[in-house]
Image 1 (tube, helix red, strand yellow):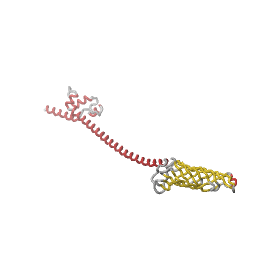
Image 2 (spheres, one colour; image 1 turned 120 degrees about the vertical axis):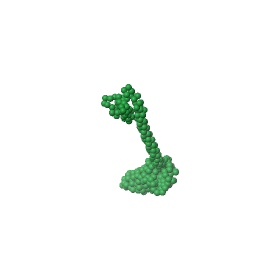
Image 3 (cartoon, rainbow, N blue to C red; image 1 turned 45 degrees about the vertical axis):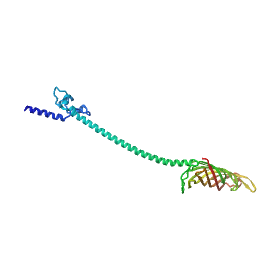
Image 4 (tube, rainbow, N blue to C red; image 1 turned 90 degrees about the vertical axis):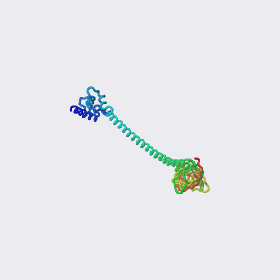
Length: 306
């Protein structure tokens, strides 16, 4: 009877021992392990483990752990759990990394596609602007395909020089300062067909080309309008005596059209120029005619050098 009671007591003590792992975990401190094992306040961890494992007095802690399977079984369970946790952590990290890489690749691919599309769009737009700008500044360059209807004018020439006939006769030059704006100037002579007489004439205008009235592969037909000044030193006759002189400074408002050829460095212009003169000199002293309004007309041909 006493032997049965002893065997039952050993079994009763062994059951909770197998159910409880006395090994301290790698993730916990000594104090946390002490609390988890419910050791006594002043009890060392080793003594607490021996007590929980019911080690014999002459048995070392390691031998006692081996006897109860703690070193391999219980501890192995912890290590297995640790390995499982590590494996899960690695799997999670790998999943996140693979997902992140995939997202990064997708973002880069989408961003690259957008960037390439944007570059192509910018290049197309920039190319169109470059073609217009280059055409506006280079001699003989093509501006655009021809078509009917009004459109903005873009010069494809820079500096031209030629002859002007009418009022006045002489040399004419034109220099484009921008694709649609130009400085126009002339030096020449106005003959006796004019209202005072004939004499030396010089002028300078700024011309603006707002629209092209016609556009074809071979030419443009821009309309222009402008403003400028002139100086005219003239002679006049009284009876048979033509030694009388006068001079004037006038305000010019030229309005005209120009046949501007695309493939040839030439243009032909036709213009009317309302003019308001302020007369001085002998003519004014004799006739007291201070102001005079008139309309000049001329046609010209220019050769463009660039």
